[in-house]
Length: 329
Image (tube, rainbow, N blue to C red):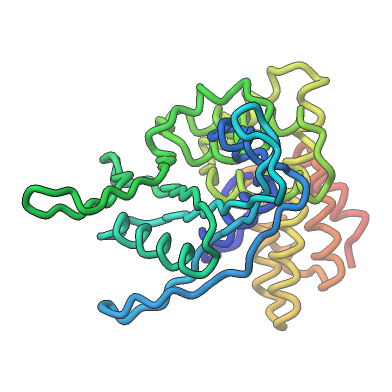
């Protein structure tokens, strides 16, 4: 979806990643940590309530992103036990650079262990675009002649991963996170198309499809030129592949239009809704002449709502002229 279809908003990165990773937790492990996935029984996973951690020196309260309690399954490396044995997977998403992050991961670890007394597998997901330098995966405390502590945690640094390596991975987390990986500016339209192509093959239920497609659109918002390249590339693929992708794109457009119109009209800002419709038409067909703009200025609230949705089906300005002739007050 292009910028013209979106309203300005503040992105809650932590919440987006929490929704993604909690909904597709097993898929996340399948993609990045198959050795851990092989150890857990996917039935009976428990997502623990988020816990506050107080960083006394800095006077800050931190909310741990996600802690999952999992049961060990019986594997050749782990013989059947008389009693059930559990472990925790702690996943922390870092959407911006933060000093002393490795130290924080260690402090989170000891607080979790103190409370639950279970083995813990800590994972950090670095999801920001910059800096590009490798992030640490350990926290050490050294004393002359002795290594007192060597705490290690697993790291996924998305800006170090190539989206091309995930093109053929039939995994919903891959479809989503490709949008946050290392992408050259000229590849943005193609990556968005490839994300959607992969998503369309997964045959997810509507709610999960919406979660992934919304994630992709949040992090790969295309400008006008990029959107044009995206649409050109989309038109070249086979119809059987293109149709489900078009359904996703159309749902984005409808949602964006409904949100834009409802926000303006619900707050009594009819002029804002009218401006929003004009913006959509201009993006779709280029600058409108004064006569067309005047006709749209004269539309009622209900007509603006109808036009906002109907314009998705317009193929050229003749369709707009016909609509205005039919719906003129």
